[in-house]
Length: 66
Image (cartoon, rainbow, N blue to C red; front, side, top):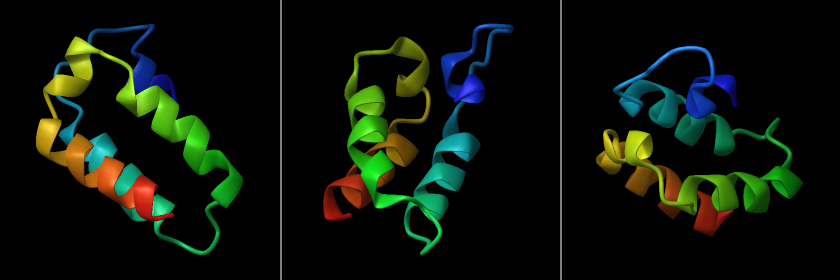
């Protein structure tokens, strides 16, 4: 979550972290109970998340399927 929140430094491109999250969400070890929490976080308006809009869209699709 620290990579997404970017409290310590300015991160301009979240494409790779979002793609990693997309992969992790699909794995058996990912707690399904966390999907709504992650979904709420990713759907909030955030200019930084817009830099990875394709990856964000893929992650949202995956989260809605879970």
